[in-house]
Image 1 (cartoon, rainbow, N blue to C red):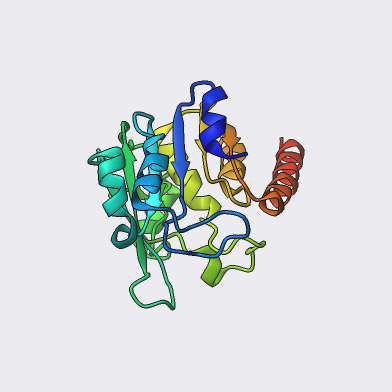
Image 2 (cartoon, rainbow, N blue to C red; image 1 turned 60 degrees about the vertical axis):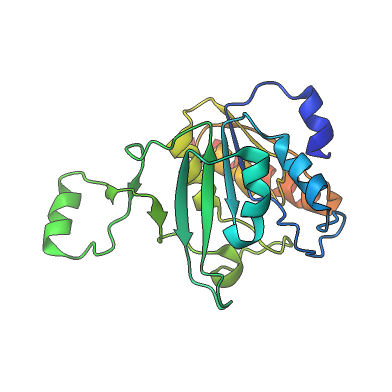
Length: 221
């Protein structure tokens, strides 16, 4: 379902997390990634006023997001390995919410260091998070878990954003759900989820992966 229609019937959600199409002419199977500037801004404006985290390349999208959503309340830089020049990082803009960096610990980079080993032995789970992430890699480039979506966001990144901005039992929505990584992250963190996706093939993959994640969670419990 198109989220532009789904929002008319949507109950209140606690958080929206999404990696939208960037309106650069990318060839998706059913979505036209070549809207007019006004139409793209109008589409993104539907999210205005909601607690929102939006993952994007600023050079492609800030010209749309500023008029559609205003100035973000917080920005996090996500850095990762990539073989594409100029594509080694993205921004995560937060609107109408602020991530609580005390909720999540970043894994130690040098766990074999004597001082770090002592901290771990004493129960420490990592270092404090700051407004940049460099420990989560892009699925497309370094993982075999590619399914069929051309540019999936790692489940771990969704989990981190979810943990920074919501609590257990909250409802998270993704208007561009793709292959369902955000829903799996919600399952893993005990959040409810609502996703919208135009592509039937992506929906089929997402539903299959969601059912698998639910079954694995039930076995684990």
